[in-house]
Length: 237
Image (cartoon, rainbow, N blue to C red; front, side, top):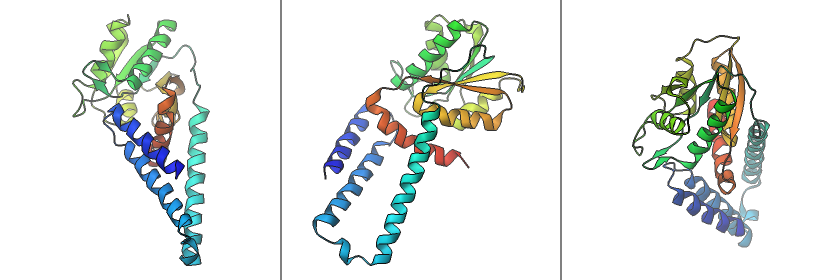
């Protein structure tokens, strides 16, 4: 019951961020799941459930946990990646734009890009992302404006503004450059997202891919890492 209540409270926290996604629903479902387990145990109802259904239930829970743990392990392999110097291009994966500028998630990605670009003056940045229904401008255009405000020259910034998910961010960005197996490309995104970003990039180019992990506020890591599990499952096929 404690886990059910904590999950429900966390869903409210995620909802109040106003990210435009429905990931808070995941935590409502988690709360319902723990509430169900508590109810079944409290009322002593498990013995009334046919043994075959109990076994199927347990197997499904074990399989779900196994998939979750494997995905989390994959995420952690790129969690602290700082990339390698000398990239020809870096691709900054888009995230939500707000009236006042990039969302916190996107800002951290762009700040990581600024740091890399300042340390590698020959590198070109590609900022990605279309304009969602709740965004004032495209994520690509917003990313470009932010980089320029931080002192990155316009000549070093390419903009992709037609994509609406991670896969499109990467494939559309690659279409802007000449694909070459001798090229080095850095993928810039938040630490929890970098495993999937580099995984997809390696699928669509023969260039050398490195990951550049941006910060994430720790109170939102549980939500982001659970949600990312579903993204990995969707894109890994």
